[in-house]
Length: 557
Image (cartoon, rainbow, N blue to C red; front, side, top):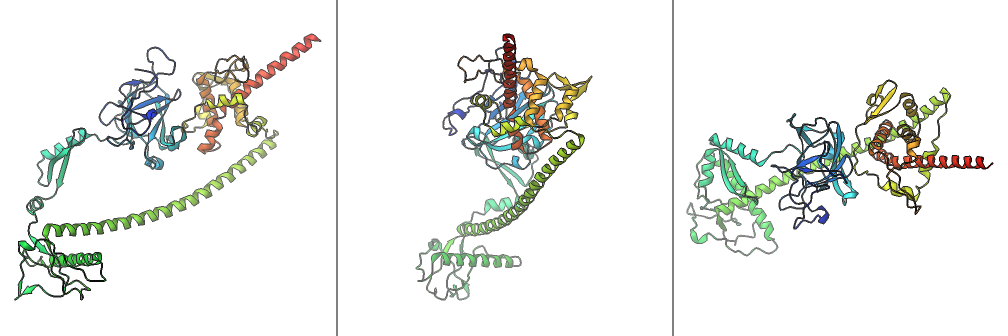
């Protein structure tokens, strides 16, 4: 067991050295960076070394986010779709985000509501994850590959959880099913071995038909000859008897085509005449028994200038193969026409949905503006006008300073998943005038209610940070623990607690989710949490320095 990710170079893989994947992970446990010691509960253990399993590599992005790489298909390194793996050594109420980062399909049913499958040892029945927790998108951080992200919360520590692309159906299960069918000795079911796969697995050929048809199929090696319609108006009958062709006339006779007529037109008319004659003959054969060696004579339309052409004779097997090809082409043409009509109807429905979506978006914007105006009017009537968040305006109008840009770039935001919004007062626990925000963090109930009416993400985040850490702790800390590059002799300060930072983000997310459902807007607003806390720390330090200056000036006076 090692820390980080498990990779192995693969020859002939076109994905690059950084994405080269060997075999499946086997009891692979992911440890945090810099951790030394025995694994604890919450250090996830991945395994895909079982039948139909597929997981080649695991990278830990953050405390609760993992990038998973799937192995390509056998002999097809460009096809990467299927995944199936297990996770154990979990902690109760542990939330994770799994990103399948190297999908090869541009279109997937995950965009239309499909979700991965999950089961556990205590709940062995496969179930689908909620579609609202699944996202399929193109990610620029992974060379614009398609990424499928889904969130999950483990609820039982003793369970082993298994995730899959869809319902797994293994090769062993399929072979058991075929064996059970073969043991029934059904007359219409026949099983033969066609060959072996690259991995030396048996390839079965199944034939499902009636016994009579099977015997006819085996015995009908078409060795007898049949004459296709001749291309002239003369009959081939002599003295009322059908002319019989011997073995010397088996090959096609090369005839000179008339001037002004293409060979494709002649062949097309000949095939049409053959099909018409065969259908007519099949209809007549219901009441009369026909001889297998019967010669079909048909005059093709538009053949007045072809009286000099000789009869063409082909083997019966070749003739029936041409006939099957012609019927197959007609069937494919019908399928293509149906598919074209189905596609046209889908395009019309999508155009209608786009129009309806545009109308809903415009109505949503109008309702938001109206809601904000009503809130302002209500606050004015209550005696307190709407407060203007100068800090938010400043952050939107001005670019961040260079020392802050390095801080912002370190924030992990590779996933488009965010937990489903829940009512704020229903989510947090109230007890003895305290509000529990999670992870053992309690704040004063009165201050919490005052925080809920605060306007602006900046002011909300800064006040919440002061409630959680306090000004004495914030002035001696930094968000990332990295010293600023603006001062050469700057000493790095201890970083803020990661679990408390996650609590701040969750509280801000609950607030934003009540205002909008746009994922892009939510992600953009949440990405500024570190910036707001940095500004609050700078304001506290600045006020402390001003206070020290005033005290020094007062002492001098």
